[in-house]
Image (cartoon, rainbow, N blue to C red; front, side, top):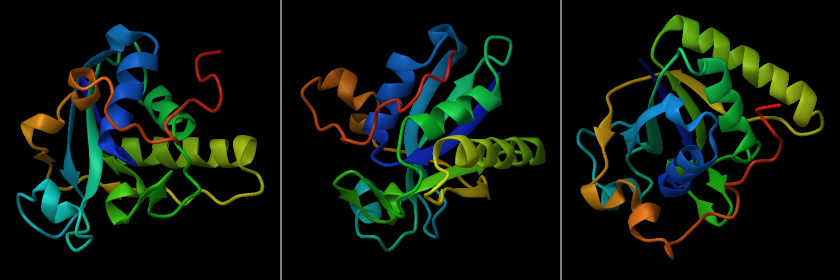
Length: 170
C-alpha cells in the first residue's frame, strides 16, 4: 500500500472522480478528504474557507501499487482538473482550491515533476501548469460530513472543472 496526497479544487469532486473513474477501481483502497499544506493546527472547514490558514482541501489516496502506479495516480490528477489555474477550479476560488501534489518521499517528488513535465509538453504546450509539488506536511481529516460527501448527497455541489480531459488508461 502506498499513499498519494493531492489537491485539485473542492475535495468532494476530487474524491468522487477518483472513486468513479479511476481504473482499476480496486487499486484505490481508501480515500479521505482533509486539509494540508497550511500554517494552523487542526483546521476546520470554516477556518480553511477564510483563506487565512493556507491549507488546501486535499484528497489522501491509499492505493495498491501492485494494481497501479504513483505515475498513473498523478497523470490522472492532471487529467481530472485544470492545473493551469492558480487558486481556482471552476467557480471555486481561494488558496484552499489550489492545484498541488504533496509528496511523501523523494521518489514521489521525482515522479510528480516528471509526469508534470510530460503533461505540460503533451497537453498544455501553450499554458503553464501552476501545480505546486511540495513535501507532505501534517494531514488533518476533514469533518465527517465531508467524507464521501457526494456519495451521501448525490445532488450536492459539483465543480465544473472536475472531469477527465484525456484518457489516462489507453
